[in-house]
Length: 296
Length: 295
Image (cartoon, rainbow over all chains, first blue to last red; front, side, top):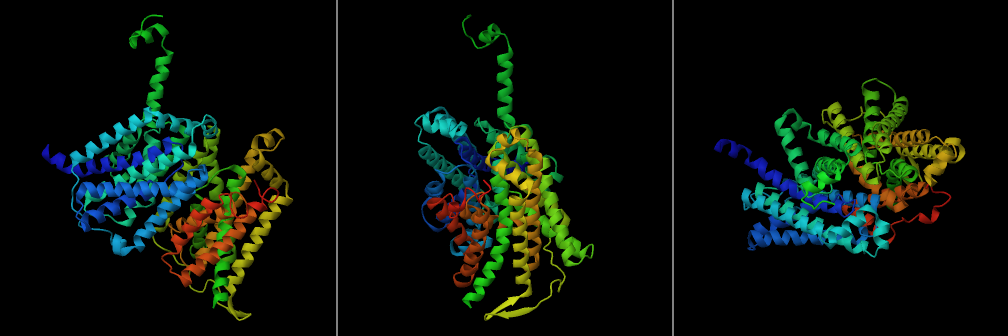
């Protein structure tokens, strides 16, 4: 049993960290942004956190906070042109952003270590801490979803024009979403650096961008559990079927196509919807009984 | 020296323009941002390479085969990926996501076909010959590239403005529902647009593959980044905009590489994208639109 835990602990840690990336992507989609910038935010957070931890006396907590602040700054910077643009422009600019972060981290070798990356980063993240962070993050996102910001996000996502005509400042909420997505993405990158001893530029490239979007699409874009379920699915499946591990990108590409066409709600939202439909199909009195409501 | 670099930039820019035209055409007519366009480009280059090395064809038939191959891959993409999504009322978000997925699948297939190697055309596939014009060294290759791009662009303009299918395409660009009511077959228009976009990408793939003598399954990614800047700079959906912005970007990039730093040229290009989005998101050639723009 102890052997089993030791074998699968690294995978478990990675699932927690990649779930954080998926949440960063989830926030953007939830707010109706076509942002694919998560991998770029992760790169900023990873390098900032690792650099602060190694080169300064700030300690792990303050280094993490510093990394998150860098992510917020990057999100706000991206939102300058992108908060007032829609659709294709946001996708184009954020994919460009991710690629530029990769080439900048290769170029800025004195800080980032170039292609070799930063190594011998102290391991300050434990499995317990990672679980706690994911739990707190989900709670936070659930609270945001239920509050005024979440309702504004919903309105903007469903109809941009209607939201604007209802007096919702779409620019302001898009900026919030970029900042929040940047903060969470940077947190994920920082955790990756604090957990795995070393980071390199190619960790934060196109494959991470694809992973984050695939996890959210597969899991579901609406409920908070969606990104987590998508991450677990994408990380565990290649472990169960070893030949799939080499074909990871092919698998994710094919899943993106098939899920968007045939099951656009994803796993969690699809199940929630099915449950609601079944609920609605029952006769009114039975439903009232089940929910503990008085008879009509 | 400056004139020489300018010339090199224009030649590279012409190829960027050729590639970006397909991207902007599909977006302008069908509102689809096809992120798998880079993979079509890469497959064009691969088909050209296999036609030369595997089938032993001469360069011109290989080039034509690559154009046809690019068109085929692009049409297959529409039939297998975008059309099922359209039938199920997919939105703009869905089309961007499936095109990312299709890009991965196409790249993976190319990785298998090439064993992840960088391939090189046989030496001397293109005659090396230099002319001296106005004090500049101009290679035969550069002349042929510019001539080929010019021919393809003229063919595109003739298609759009002188054929019935082109007229249909422009009608669909303005309003797809209304043009269907007027008896235009949307499937034919999608077929035409994707075939032409793929053909242009395939041609660009072979040209760049020979010019840099390197073909690999990763070659579509950097050019997509350039094309993003080109189509935003030129105005999303604008044909003359893509043409002018493509040449402009080639010149800017070449001059940056020569006079500033080659590592930073990507960052300069992205900085340009950011500034354009901030200052003029409709692009710098939006003034040309309405009648000239396909959308």
